[in-house]
Length: 456
Image (cartoon, rainbow, N blue to C red; front, side, top):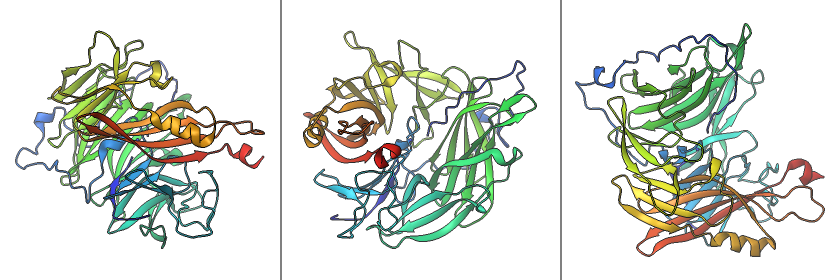
């Protein structure tokens, strides 16, 4: 590695669980202290803070579509922790070099398998590392989940130096107390301005009825009190997301018989405000909250259509601000990101299904930043490297701003002789937006073997 000065960008978890419901439809409980209409809040006497400070604030670009991978950015180096990988990686921003975050000369690191066990490697974080890592005071912080009954903590926070050395324990995160018993599990940890925000999700049987309640919580890292921002009550919740913005944490909850709620909790007043409740959009997984607190989202997904409009939430109602309409290509929105909307040629269920991809990138004001083919030369480079055909499975993440796009692809490498399964390869690619089009930079790739096959 050449340079190590970090700013946190984390890359996002879609909690989509299928469950059956009974015939009766009890109403979900309201969020604590939430108001029925945004304009009725008691915060009119003060100026709310929606500002963004890259030194302390979470980068919400990486929440889209349930991303659970971490990306930490420096002046010329990225740190990369793919979902399911046991090792922190680093890569030069110009794409010239990458590897496991370990400087030991004789270390085998991950041995070509991101699910390997190698506690002697400085880059090894283990199988229980969970999203999201962050940077604070020149240290990389990461969270390891614990097993209920074996520890008083649900998770533990550790930190290490920027070169992978000096791993040390910081503090534990206590199990949250809920009214739903021991079946609730904290997940999706996001550190923002010294507060750890997270979801609590689980399931249990109430009589003969299955229940999957959802809670959203906040824990100050210099305290021990877990504050509940939202409790769905005993309902079947299918999805939840949290998104810190300034002093607020926005909460997206889908469940309770297909009703979606958008709320925000203030870390100043510790009050939860209801911004929207309805069923116009279904699950809201493609959204953005700007620095005025305004929520943008993609239209409701329709089979055969996709999502072709961008909507803005105004006083509890959705209004259309942009439509992706082209006479020759059927576009569907892939991501609503930092001031930009990314659409691609429509594919059912958003599977990539091939390498010929049409992309359309527009600002929120409708101006087109790029419209054309998505450069995919990196696949040919990997095929030359690994000596065979590479299958493009999907893009796990696609986000960006007016200057660049970041994509995380899942691929299948050529299957070696004697192996039953082909290894999965996760590829991180940046596309710089220039006046001449998109400049493609392959940053890093990591390989995952099926464990049984790997040791077979």
